Image (cartoon, rainbow, N blue to C red; front, side, top):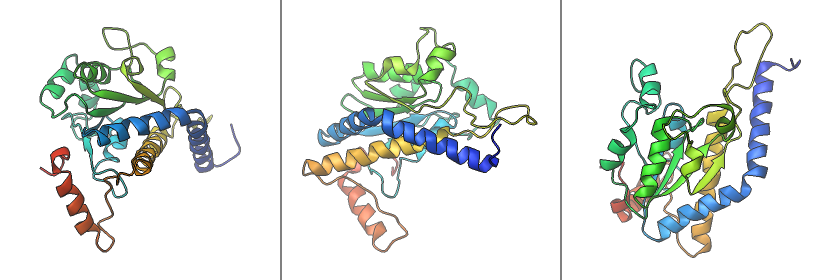
Length: 251
């Protein structure tokens, strides 16, 4: 056990993970940002999906000051964060075969779009089938997951595969199995999860790459500004009007 205070232990662990992501995932981040820029430039739409707490990182990309206006949330009722009661029902829904097909069939996703699928473990039926079925539709899929789960846990999908096996690109969050950064002798379970901090930062790095890539091509990135700065609402109204056929959260 470290002699550092738990708060310091957690922050140091999160910083170490962010450094690993920066150093080890740099090429993947560049590739993901380029894929999204290609999608925007070619007229495609952007979507993000996550189940349970993985949905928090997806939601952080949508209608976000400083973010891409074209990013839409692919929401699945009952699995968006902890929006369902009892909360364990959300975990159970992630394991339901066929749910992803029903979601995609009723969604606006189409060939030429891009979908970010965020799942820490990548082992449940919902993210696995979401990736498989989206790619079958001609959607480019970027998976954001902890690759360690594939070697240390058993898949819950009938194929025995994981999210990482069905993506055009994979971003590895480096989170250890169990998602808890601190252990103490007098606490019976490990605690202090870092997946939300690291995954959100990883995705914002991708968004930054996308915006810069579009700018390098001579295209203005469709960015939103904060509504709490003067002129922000007018700016956002213009952006959303210009791209209204590719934005679904305003309808």
